[in-house]
Image: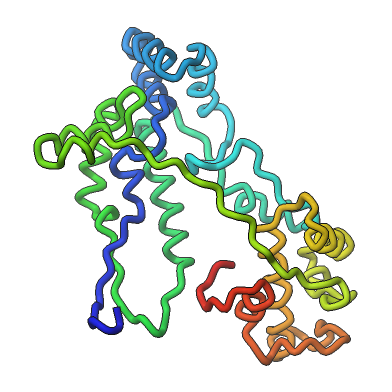
Length: 298
């Protein structure tokens, strides 16, 4: 990009939500039919989805119904059970429960259709994600998001859900619209199987390096005993939530950096004199984990 002088990047973020590209699921379509009281159509689609998915119809109907009665994560790929790391202090978890549970929501019976409510929730999550992303100083550019165009989103939300996602078929509308334009081999190609990433060979800090004084414990975020125990488990290749642990370590070094710069009161600086001011906390942790990356992942 620097060599050619490119200044604009087109991003495909939000394309899955706008075009029905998620893994085909009947929940939103069935919920739309429920609130419209289209019972005959509901029964027909329920049988069709049950045959396609090889599942009984009643569990599919229950999955659609419970969206109106319980709060759940709005991300389509969110796991059923979202538990914060065990080394977080209970008070911190209680105060930040909504964020730690991915801002759960419950569908309303009245107002917009469930599929529209879901689209708005996904749009809000996308806005948070884009606000979180960092710009690279060495690659100053404008990033544009065609799938977040207001006219496109209004058009997509006005299309009936059963036209967007066919029974067991993703991008149902887009593929039909491009028939005869895009070769059939591309339109009907099978999805690539996702190969699991090889486990990272991470050089975890030792308990001695972290020290006995954990600033995030002093601030009521982390329980130092459980946190250091998790680090020990990670060093021993134990079963631990590695991503959560990495973020917790990034948080700790960032707080130490703030303390060394005088942003936090000096009494919070670890006694062993951590050299947090020599590198920004995030880069320090990336180097510790064996990655010389300057991108923000925490």
